Each structure stands twice: as C-alpha cells, then as structure tokens.
Amino acid sequence: MLIRKAVRYRLETTPEQDNLLARAVGCVRFVWNRALAVQKSYLDQHCGTLNYAGLCELLTSWRNSEAFGFLAESPSMPQQQTLRYLTQALKEAFNKNSVKKFPNFKKKFVHDSMRYPEPGHIHFDLNPVDRDGRKVLPKIFLPCIGWVKFRKSCIIGGEIRNVTVSRSGGHWYVAIQTEKEVPDPVHPSTTAVGGDRGVANLLTLSDGTMFLPVTAYRDLQKKLAREQRKLAHKVKFSANWKKQKAKITRLHQRIAEIRKNVLHQVSTTISKNHAVVVLEDLNVRNMTASAKGTVDKPGRNIRQKSGLNKSILDQGWGLLKRILDYKLQWAGGMLFLVNPAYTSQTCSVCGVVDAGNRPDQAVFRCLHCGHEAHADVNAAQNILARGLATSHGVASTAGLVGVVCSPE
Image: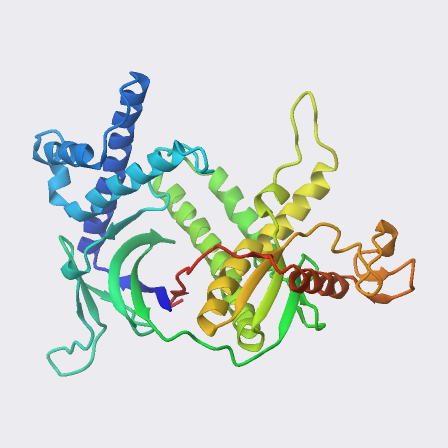
C-alpha cells in the first residue's frame, strides 16, 4: 500500500527571511492573478486559453522584462507550479462532469503559500551544532531563501515528493509531503460499528460509545466578538488595525487547532478499535446553507437555522470523515458511507419508520413495538445495519489524504 503523508513544521525565521518569504509568496500570487487575467482576456475574445507551455513562455518574458523584473528575484519553481495549478483549475472548470467553479483572483494575506515541486532542490541539516558543540534547531534549505531553522516535532518518514511553505496566524510553516510503500496492513480488530454524527454529541457509535461535542468556537465566541468590535473602531490599514487583525487571526487559528486536535483523538480511538466504520453520506455544505432566502421568498426560522449551522460547522463533520477514512485505510480497515434517509426515525428492532418514534432530541420510543433507546444510538445501529446489508454500499472515495503533524 502506498502511503502519502504531509508533516508540517513551524519555521523560525529571521526578519530578513520573513521579507524574502513574503516577497516570494507575493510573486506567486502576482503570477497567478496576471496569468488568470490573460486567460480571461483570451476567453472574452473567443480565442480559447493558453496551455501550460504558453503560460511558461509568458512567465519567462515577465521575469526578463524591466516592468516585472522583480519576479526574477524570487524562486522560479513555485511560480511555474502555480501556472500548473491554474491550467488544471481551468481544465476542471470547463469539465462538464466536474463541480469545480471558474478560478478566482487571489487576495493578499489569504492562503499565502508556495510549493517547491522538485525535492532535489531542498536540503536538510537535521543535527546541527553551534560553535560550543551544543545542539541547535535543525535547518532546511529553500532556494532563494537560504537555510531556515524549523521545529522538528516528528520524523520525516518516506521519500520526499514536494515541499510547501505557507503563512498562517503570523507564522511561517513548511509542509513536507512524503511517500512510502508498506505491506498491506491487516486490522487487529474484526468489529464493525455505525456512527451517527450530531451536535449534542460529536459522534455516537452503535455500541453505545459517545464522544463529547467540539465546543472550540462556542467557548471563544464572546472573546472573538469582543476583539472584532475593537477592530471595527480602528482606522482601516493603520498600524493598530493590523495588530488587531493579527490578534483575531491567531484566535481563529487557535479555534481550528483545538477542533483538529479533538478530531484526531476521536478518529485514532475509533480506527484502532474497529475494522469497519459506517457513516451517513451527508452533504454538509447543503446542510449548512443559509436560510435567509430571497426578498421575494424569505426563509423561515432563520435565527434557529443559523445557530444549527454554527453548531454543525463547529463539529467539523467533513474533516472527521476525511481523517477517519485515511486512518482506517492505513490500519487495514474500511469506511463506508450510506444513505442517511430516515435513520433517526426508523426502529432498529422492528424497522418501522415513523416520525412519532422520536418524541424529543435524546429519546427514541417505537410506537409499534415499544422499543426504547437513546435516539443517537438507535440511529447509529440503523446506519450500521444499512451498511452491512448493502453489499454494493458506497465506499468512501476520499483517497489517501495527508496527515498533518503540527508542532503547536
């Protein structure tokens, strides 16, 4: 089995390296936006689009010109890589079978990143020492940036495929994608469980196990609102505005890291103890869509729907499914997705479907046979039964997704 992972480390940059990295990702963003503008102008004139080779010729002319000569001061490989991404994005946008939309222009400070596609240009010094013979932080060599210290929180296992440098929460990070081939694993367990994702509990298993909900956003919501009010009273783009903006960004990052940490703990526990996990095939994006409606057809119960959307997004249902998928594959297990219709209204004993079987959020009481159980446990048992009964069940197609080992 081929395993792909991405280990993520925090860089310890100097002020000079900060400027070089900011300039490099700025050049990557500039190349994307200018190339996208060229492609849109070609489309407006009904001339089709340039292929990757044509875009590379444009990039060469830009780097050699006087007006855009600043591009030559930054590494060329990330700039070429962003043209590959743009070409692929346009191809997917015009594919009738794809759900991808037409690519957008990139904004400053939003998902700033660049990728080095050639691992041969990246070098490591994992056991450096200072003049006194004491160990110091390991270093990574990035073309046009130099040797940069980083916090090595976990080992780099496997063959390096590419390296991505990104900025998040005021810090720079390097993600190293590795690849290695291992013998097909055999899961030590033979049990199968169904899981019902919810907001009262993050996940309820068919064996009665319940995992507490993630409340990272709810716990910090008041503090976040307070910091956002402070931002609203400052002059936009002033020095104090930028400091307050950075504080809010760090707070959002803290919320995301807490959520990710909980989901990793839950998914590790489940993937180690169960060989087969069955979940509902939920379309989270549609479930969390706004209920405001339009002027002609306004929505109903907007305030209640908004609160429900916030709770669903706080749980990270989609991320939990994705993490469970690759962890089960690495352990030799399997994740199945089944149709979620009426799993909460169906009796797991007699199979009768009735909306009255669920008098409230936590209680399930069958009006036909009198079976009583926790509503989420009953739903999880229905999900498991549906997954085992459907021999042509829809297996998860997320594929091997990289795990991120964060030093935070």
